[in-house]
Length: 397
Image 1 (tube, rainbow, N blue to C red):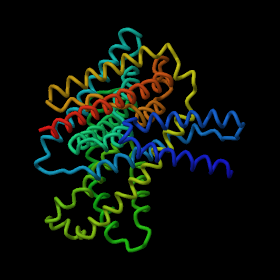
Image 2 (image 1 turned 180 degrees about the vertical axis):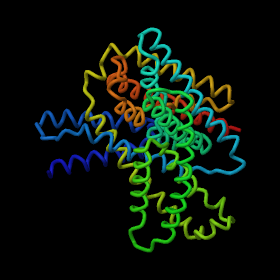
Image 3 (image 1 turned 135 degrees about the vertical axis):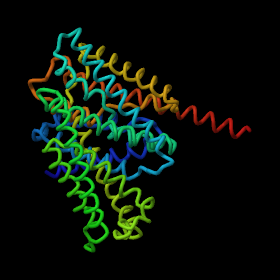
């Protein structure tokens, strides 16, 4: 037991070092965490350490991590009338490539691999979603505009991707009634979000006990889990709750918001944000360390899926570049930031057994995650060089 505690503490301290050094090295912490987790497994095997089966822990950590990461990102988003055009562009970047790649890859699998279209679509969607768990932390050292773009885009990609996946995977038949039920579920979720957001904000401003933020986070996770169990778009609640709390200054003149004492609540939100960031870091680090620990060497080196992984990542890069250019959004370094990670793993693990196909397997998912992380690292490093040249040019002027 003592050895296990020591190992966990050392691994998490390494995770912290990776996180604070990312601004200098431009190496995404996810690569280092996966590597560290993989090395930890070899270490455990070499010394014959008794490690329990941790496979079932991964989906739980992933779900909690997703909630906290989207909440952390949404708390930082600034929403006002001047931002509407910007938000619209990020929404298009989140939606269009996701749908085009999902349907395009599904038709490819249907035509060349003779996989039924619906099954192909269920397997394609997880690969089309940007991982906010990797993208948001990696964007912390970009310009404020690029950081905001990545936060909006990846959060929306997660939400829309999860809703799209559940819509396809959970409905045996997709017809007019299916869309009707889906529309009703969205309206129900918006109503639930409105009521629970006001309730949680009220509690945050009124609780006088020295422990107040942990219950709010626990209730947030609880509401998400219950909503998800009823097949509602639960991430919508997390996003809107975070945006509401993060933009109280924009609404403080509203007579209903005044009842929440926005002056006091704003200070509490800042503390709540700091705690959320701390917990999100720990959960994210443990998730990727555990995922790295569970990786088998043969899965990384599987030559049968390498070409598929390269082709998929190349397609994602090209598709992303095209839309950035069409929407006149800064191509560098945003074209390189399309990591796949936590949400891809979660959705892949939740694919019903009857929808699983041989080509979309553990090896392919791992290789795509690693390749997309390396592509992002290349873009971040190149961006560092461009910025350095710009600074030198400005100094000469």
